[in-house]
Length: 191
Image 1 (cartoon, rainbow, N blue to C red):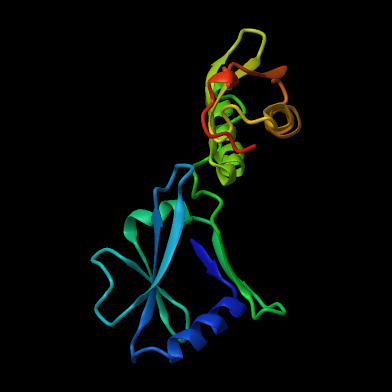
Image 2 (cartoon, one colour; image 1 turned 30 degrees about the vertical axis):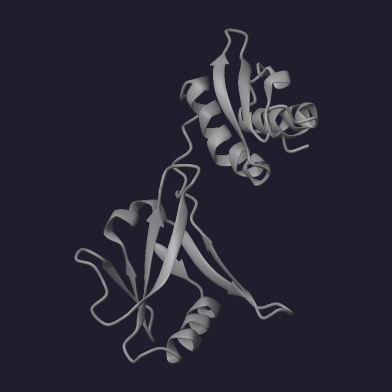
């Protein structure tokens, strides 16, 4: 199910030693299978676990995993990397944002997955979003920009160097990516 590296286990042990006796950790996912998916790791005081939580023995503490979160955390890894600033905890959960459609899935479905898992997290940092309008018979992917991307002066660069490149890497049969947005009507563009 889930792997906790020795470095992460040692890091958590140090944190938990500073807490009330018997405090453990609890892990759950928020909005799994969506672009807004995230992981929430919290202290779990004695008796704070929920019915159905799966208990994972980590030698010096117990990690309780929220039952509905188990499937989206399959293959996840929790690690702690020491650096000059102290260190960084990372939780990598490959199934968190949903499962990649198979190569035999419709082009539209695969295009939406690429947008939601790869493209929108990047443009969200600028308050933008990208939606799929259609996939043509010629395998052109037509997109609609919104938020900070709607009216942005850098949208052509984002489209060709970012989105189209990523889309073609992920779905080689895509011929081109086309912007159907009326950028003259954009409000509050990023640039």
